[in-house]
Length: 333
Image (tube, rainbow, N blue to C red; front, side, top):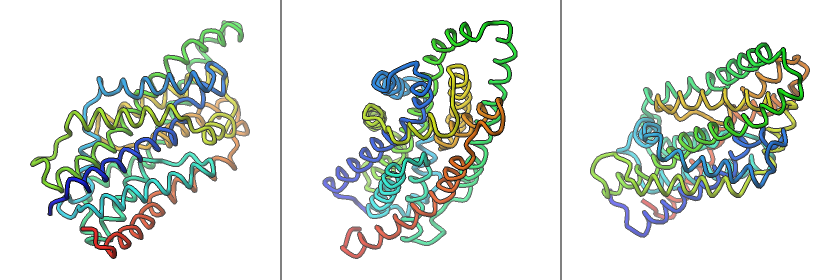
């Protein structure tokens, strides 16, 4: 099929709108800890995070974008209505969870919605099992890896710093947390912006505007710009949940959580896996919190977050399927 230029431009704008919403929805992941420990003010933190979101463009490739764009859904069944319904489904779910302050995964909302629209179009044969295997595996592994690394880093730091006075440790890690927040923001920008790149490249390929699945340079720049601008707009409801409701963090804990999250995301990005940055940092924060005592973690809040995670892919898929049928009914190809 071919997609008219006007419709293609509209789809790209909706994709960048999702990327922007991803930025403000997931801004909390990279700056909640640095704000809650009062290392930076909220305004300073979003500028810091947005800069490093964009800086990721100079460091990381496009492996995640290729997985999302052509490794999970059979590109032959992709049409303008599939892409548009997938984007709308992801945006709707992101806005619902943002409103209620739930740190769900924009990544899983996007792949769930994209899959839901594709299944509505062609059935389950539209899915590529090999692409889904590693993604679904990391839904479980991402928070566990974040938890384990957060716990291990925090234990190691406490052991190494035990001869020093608490005030001195606090002073050191207030500075080091700037570095860990920057690392996490790099990972967030690299993994999440690439998901939007994959969707836009899929639309270009499906419409015949590119003849092999590659990521044009202008698509990279547009996606990194959109997510950075979204981060600049904040996401204060979720920052409150991530930074204060799960567990109370000191600068040393914030450093451990952000560093654990960054390592996890760098690894997944190198492997081309569209991992959830939300799941990773939440697991890391819980891992850090449990080094004090199990009761330091508010398990009721953590349980609500887990339920939101479980629901994200099926809920966004159902929403997107509904929008696909609406678009199909009004005659969109």
